[in-house]
Amino acid sequence: MRWLLPALCVPIAALAGCGSDDEAPTRTVRVGAGQPVRVVGSEYAFDPGRIVVAGGAAGLRITLDNQGDLAHNITVFDGDAEIGGLSSFPGGEQRTTTVRVKPGRYRFVCTVADHEELGMEGELEVRR
Image (cartoon, rainbow, N blue to C red; front, side, top):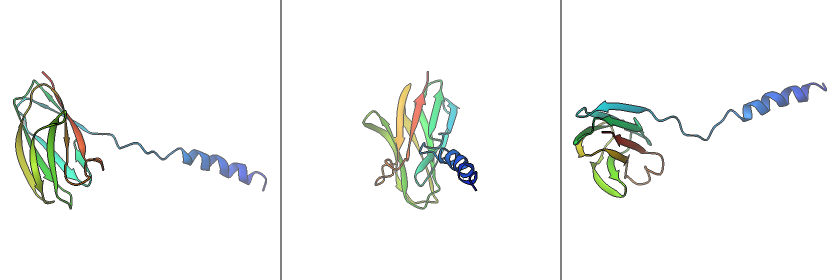
């Protein structure tokens, strides 16, 4: 009986370190200039969460496939300035837009209610 308590403490202590508050890894999609990008929106995430465009881009064609139950949108920002995107639309639909970008880093978010704060955001990098 003396060995039972120490024998139980080791596995319990090991399991305590198994959980994580870290977010799931963000999937990155790489495309060439002129290639369209498909982004899936759901509650409350975008997939991919990171888009890299090689070769510069004048107009980036983005299709948002809203696979969530709620309305979502996608809005692209250069710093605090909104440079393009789509208005909110219901789940089960998809819409396409073209956003004019130049080499640099941008962020894309869902601006519906608190969706951005809940994790519905991503990064867009346009390389030369």
